[in-house]
Image 1 (tube, rainbow, N blue to C red):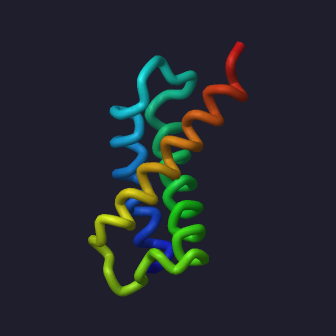
Image 2: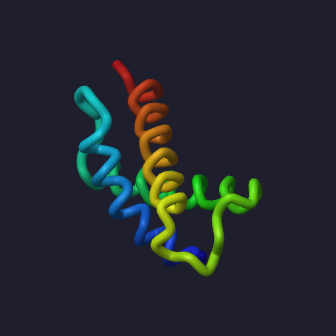
Image 3: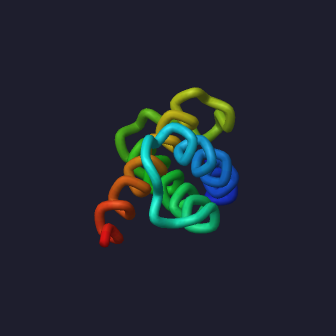
Length: 84
C-alpha cells in the first residue's frame, strides 16, 4: 500500500484509537490525528517487513488492525512521555 493509503488509514485509525484507548489523553484531536498517521505508517512498515501486509489489498483487515494498533501504541507512548 502506498504512503498516501497509510496516511488515510492513519486519519481513521487515530480516531478509532482515541475511542478505544481508555482514560484522558494529554493531546487533543490534532495530536491524535498526527499520532494516528504516524502509527499507521509504522504499523504498515512493520507489517510489510514481516510479510503480513499485502500492498494490493487496501481494505484488508490486517491493514486496519496494524493501523489501529500502531496508533494506540503511539498514543500510549505519548501519554506516558507527556505525563506531568
